[in-house]
Amino acid sequence: MIWSQLLSSKRFGLESHKQQPDDRTEFQRDYDRLIFSAPFRRLQNKTQVFPLPGSIFVHNRLTHSLEVSSVGRSLGNDSARLLLERHPELSDTHLTELGSIVSAACLAHDLGNPPFGHSGERAIATYFSEGNGSWLQTYKDPVTGDSLTPTQWNDLTHFDGNANALRLLTHHFNGRRRGGFVMTYSTLASIVKYPFCSDLAGDHQKFGFFDAEREDYQKIADELGILRRESTPGTLCYARFPLAYLVEAADDICYEIMDIEDAHKLKILSTADVKELLLAYFSPKRRDEIKQNLQQLDVHDVNEQVVYLRSCVINMLEGECVRAFVDHEQEILDGRFEGSLIEHIDDTPRLAYEACARTSYGHIYHSKDVVDIELAGFRVMTFLIDLMVEAAMHPDRAYSQLLINRVSRQYQICAPRLYDRLMAVLDYISGMTDVYALDFYRKINGMSFPII
Image 1 (spheres, rainbow, N blue to C red):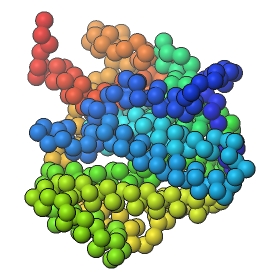
Image 2: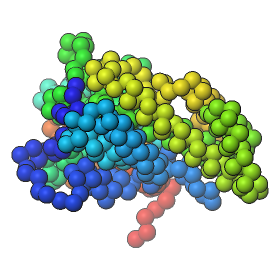
Image 3: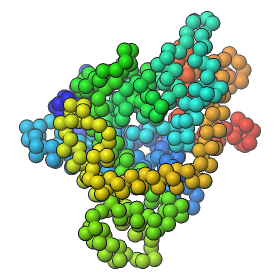
Image 4: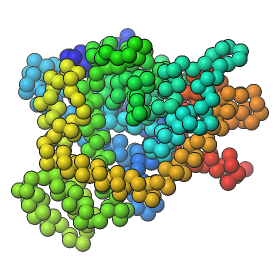
């Protein structure tokens, strides 16, 4: 892969459009388009890890995405500066705009996530793999003979927010323009963390595009010259787009460190535990400097001390990931790079990061509040999916018609093809916020009644 081809300002769905001169670059336009979009605004009401806040404000999907975008911009800008020192001949290419591309992709990386965090993804997948939707695997329409292909079934049983983000940005929803958000090719490629189809998802359920967007991703990959990997006949697998490593690094840095800070605010982790975890990222000499700086802060304001430590760690990890990206540039371009950038940083910060990950898994992601929201979210999501799938499969029934009339016309719940109908249901459900989904659930079950 070569940088001059990988970095393209051509827009998906507007390939023949001639770009007009403007003070903003095309990648800055991507960023602005996302910031002002309804799906992005809805992230403010979607769970990140902890339940949406009461008196203590923790991260939601919106604040997380903004922070990831900020770190991503720094990763892109610093990587571009070092790469241009190595390749001055690329100064007239879009390499100078890596920061803008990565920051826009970071804004979009969680757009496809359903309500209630990862429990929402699991609720969708297990509804089809082991729940009430399992019968659809062998269903054949008695009139049209239509049924689901193995790949389409894998899309449902391995439902993934990453693939759904690409769908949201590129799909031609009813009444919308072709090309979806009409983003630049490079920004779209940067959000695809797992560039292969659902047939290759395996036990971890991760993949990059649904069968419905298979040709769209092929088009993006061909345009940018992304390497195609050998895979089982009938499947599709590519090397990762280089900038996707920077998007992943920004996400890894933010969610791991900010989850620790949120857990401290919620008193899940003690101040002493958090300080120990965060100071472990640094060499003994740098650790002593940070401790001296901590002494200058208000000793009674432990939150401010944690904020200072967190900022030091994020700054250090950003520099480490930039170094890893630039040091492994050729492996990345050749499609030979394995793992994430975090896995290739120096031993001290890497081991500290792994310690944070173990703490998060053991004390945060399995804490009572987190498990409670997952249990509730799983129940709400399963109920709503079951309800809407039933309506999509039997649209002539009176109750089905009431439900379908509640759905925006952009979602083709009554599409002729079975796969398209089911994907429309998931488009509708995954686009909900936590509050909207819960309110809908309560109204349907008679727990609350609309004011007339």
